[in-house]
Length: 91
Image (cartoon, rainbow, N blue to C red; front, side, top):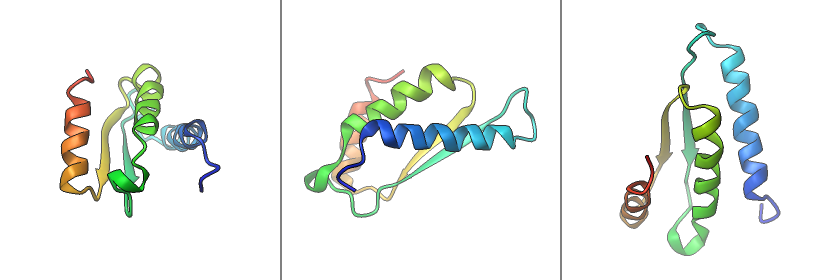
């Protein structure tokens, strides 16, 4: 797992998103939701802010109208506070 880069994870998200969009009931205005499983992830165990930034950088310009929700679950109180603080700097 430690050999997986942020780019690898983003590529997997893009491939999965493209698959979901191809199967959309409404191809003219498809909507997607992304679920990020954070089981076992804590600030001290290696919460990858760089990875979340990379995912956002890929999805914001390339899928602006399709991403309805991005859910990160479960999150600790500390992780939730950190994420909310970081998201204050996002659109």
